Amino acid sequence: MPITAMTAEQDRVRELQRTLYRAAKADPGRRFHALHDKVCRRDVLERAWGQVRANRGAAGIDRVTLAAVEQSGVDRLLDELAADVREGRYRPLPARRVFIPKPGSQERRPLSIPTIRDRIVQAALKTVIEPIFEADFQPCAFGFRPRRSAHDALQLVLDECARGRRWVVETDIANCFEAIPHERLIQAIEERIVDRQILKLLRALLRAGVMEEGAVRRSVSGTPQGGVVSPLLCNVYLNRLDRVWQTREHGVLCRYADDLVVMCRTEAEARRALAALRAILAELGLEPKEVKTRIVQLREGGEGFDFLGFHHRYALVRLALFVAKRHKKPRSYGWLMAAYESPNRMGLINLNGRVIAPRPNRPWREKPNAGGERRR
Image (tube, rainbow, N blue to C red):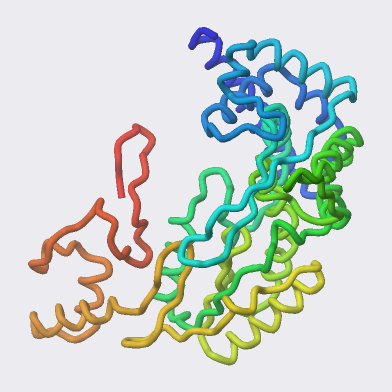
């Protein structure tokens, strides 16, 4: 496809997403009922194919690879998928189940690999429904969301620590992707979407099951890890946790998919936060993973906690004390210089742009401004 035509199609898809997001944001009670035809749109399917191709990935149980699809004809495949979905003939195949090692652990994580056809349909579905749910998601949720990343979640943790919240509840949700009940997930989706064909398509994807050691296993729970739409569905369900948390005063929640921490000011608040987490998750049919659940106090020389691949300890005070002593100033001056002012003024080496400990209330990664230039 020529670049100009591809750009025009991408612009139409982006405009569709903006329209859906604005409509959902303007009316929090609106329930959408005319979405199925948009999943079948050729520009939406073209974008879905581009995303699947860019992510590469292995073949599903049909053993059809990306190279095989390109050799036999992408246009033909997309035409077939559009017709099948539009006319209700589409049936997803079970995903291929494999197990991959968890970094730093003896455990193995189950990964489900749908067929390329199913990945394209899931990507098209996600393109259409994601903007609607994005309008409802809470600021405390960072995982698998547009224009949000693990770095944004880590920045929140740093900022709240700087504000005095140094008692941390650390946990994650046990087998979250495998444990989410299908019917309760559909109920959460129905808060916004009542298009019967979309709901039927989602049910079919959830019930497709996985093939493991030659046998197909289907369950009444779970959004298998590896599915294109699974992270979005996980966020839709856990948004119930996020919404409830915003109405209570149990510290600041920071959630990245099923991994979360709560930043608190006191030990008592942290204990109340952990009790509240257990209660809310139980209402959702979920539970925290006990071996990863604990309360940690961030203090000088104390223990830290792990979150999103980083180990967090409270240590910036050492630099502040060093600067204050070096310049014969009070501790507050050292903290101001180390945390906020340019380190070049203090005879320190400026490490901006390197992967180092970030500063509170100062983004630790550069972002483009309106003109495309890099800024901090």
